[in-house]
Amino acid sequence: MTINHVIDEIYQPLCVLKQDKDRTVYLALSLTDFEVVDLHLFKSADKHWYSPWQMLENLEHTGLVRVMKKGETDGFSYIALEHLAGLSLDQIVRALADQSSGNGALSEEETLHVGIQLTQAIGYLHSVKVIARTLAPETIFVGNDGRVVITALPFAIGKDESGIALPSQERIIPGPFTAPEHIAGSGYESADIFSICALLYFMLSGNPITNLNALELQILGGRISIPLLSRYVPGITAEIEKLVMQCLAYEPEKRVATCEDLRQELLNLLKKIGSHYEEPSKGSPILANLVTRVRKLNPPSPKVLFANESPTSEFFPSPQIAPSSPQSTKDIEPTELHISPSSWIETEDGRHIPLDQNKLRVGRPDSQKGIQPEIAFPYPWVHRRYLLIERIGELWYVTLEPNATNGARVNQRWLEPEIRVPLKDGDIITLGKENHCVYMTFHNK
Image (cartoon, rainbow, N blue to C red):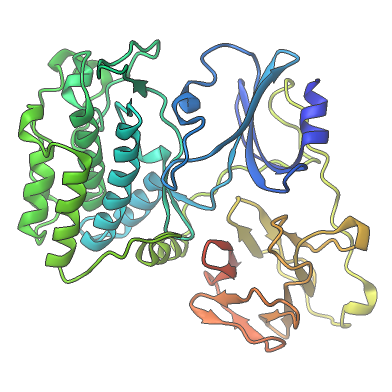
């Protein structure tokens, strides 16, 4: 099997999400089961390329990213991961912290919802004898559906039947989310509890527990002074601060004993602040609303390269993406108005699509039926003809197509078929519902 076979016959690349000298990440469509995946192509078959996902393979949990397929060919390595639509915890916290005025980043309710889902995922890992060793907000993902997912575990280790941690070839790099015992070269389940609460601290305050670098943490052995949360969030609930600071203790025995114990403590705190948590089968509505709120702040999007651009590395082929068909002349109403290049649609996978025509259709491409919408999404639940975005006079409108039964919203307002709704800068357009949904943002500067 050749690399061309992988990207042409097993996966159809849609666009490039990320690229550096050693790796290219495509948004791709699997041609066997028609699922959308993140396809990572690595320059070499070095044994360390797979380490971030090695402990995730063959594990099934809603809080862990699914490893769909992996392999090596032609000196390349590749792995297909479940595609997650949403934002990383790092993006969310930093976007909200930039907007806050000394009152932290996420609300207490939002933070507790994230923490509860994290304890479930890490608790599951512990039940199958895996220790995460460290977590990072860049690899914690909050989906459009409110599901919290761990997308990589680069330093995870397993345990043998007697409970002894197995040696790892991946040397841990100390950071603000690493427990002191891991910095010292040991550590078990309680170290993951430290990492979870370091993330809670980051979510509540918008600040890590320390700004020391890896070398400084190594020299100190992780024995650092952590400011109280109330320094950053003066009105924080005292019991929340007490629990987080307890689990950040240098001595493991002073922390909560297990992930299940921590989960119960978080559930109790949620009740105390007047909220509740229903076990979500498809994610948390509280966190789904959080992602929508952050999208309105315009967090930075990943760089996306298309087929007509030159990739920065000669090692990876560029996906052959069919160009959009020109708008049919009979569909365009004659007008003398100039279409402003400052109006565009930003999709959740990072595409910036200029609104340079009077009418643009949104939907799923189908080459056999000759359907190629200007704003295309490959998901099977996306209707071929879903939305119409059009300019009338000085305003832009969106209209739900009559047969688009999966529904669409502008912000929280559901659209009625064939009823135009005006758009304003920053509006979030959602296609679909529940766990089958995709977002895009309308910009008009």
